[in-house]
Length: 413
Image 1: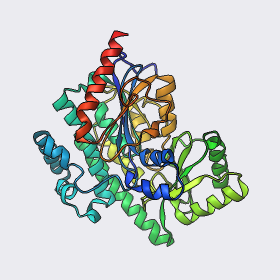
Image 2 (image 1 turned 60 degrees about the vertical axis):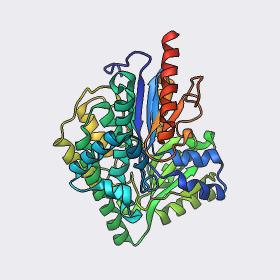
Image 3 (image 1 turned 30 degrees about the vertical axis):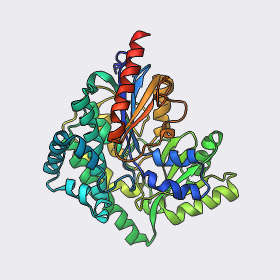
Image 4 (image 1 turned 45 degrees about the vertical axis):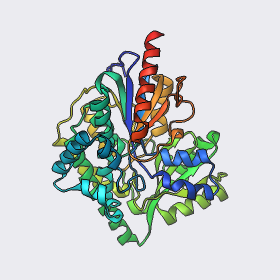
């Protein structure tokens, strides 16, 4: 980290990510989940921006599967900021070569919910909100943000925000990557006859490490250690993977739903663990070897795209849980992210404990759960406790005012 500059203490960290939406919360509560557990599950795919010392961190919905996206999710932004939003959506449509803005605004849901549409739609909506924050409210990202990070899909938003990749290039990458991911899921289902998806597990915080170790043992991964390339040598249809480690008591499994159920039985009968489990609103096994063709595409595509390194600020990798150290590492880890575990909790702990991030702000569509980054973060005595969510135009001015207040107070310390 010595080669990366952490600038003056009033600046911010930005992060972006993605998953299922808060519409699932009621069903999860009915299944016996506590509110904080459901909030954490709903939040794990959000965008996050953090700042060191008295700096800001932004959380926003991105996407891991489906659920965050909804028809009309940009309507309030268009109505309140027509010039900025209109220009941005025209830019998005021009880059993609079709009117995704119409799908977002008018639907139908069946079209927006397709992976190849929902992923670029959510990523673009996050950047739209950031553009409004910059252009309408004078938020200078370069000078006020210290580091960016993003969960899963949100990593692309984080890289755009940090200046590593142009928005147009990132949008095209996300669209084509999503198309391939959808193809991977269809192919796996056809070849195996199995259903695929993702299941969140919630345990007691002091049981997390033991749960992960037992899962790795059952999956035969314990002896492999950390993977450092794309040559995993795994039969992709036969494997269940730990897709995300999202918090001190939540992980997500990805792969065959039947095999995940078998693993849960083994955990309960032979492993001494009984985590609460809920299937997420996704029919795709993201962050598993089934997505290898998407990873291979990313390797080729990133070689043809201009990357800026170093950029405006550090960006934390999903795969390593630490800032990217070079352009070559960025290409490798961003490709590997398609098939590897998102080490979100490691990223948050790094920023909170080692970099001293104090303020976190979410950006993106959908209701952002604050428990994703843990109750340990957000240590500013102001409304929201130093953890905010920019997902609603009605709350935007209050959040900007709170940010400015905390920056002023920091400058007086």
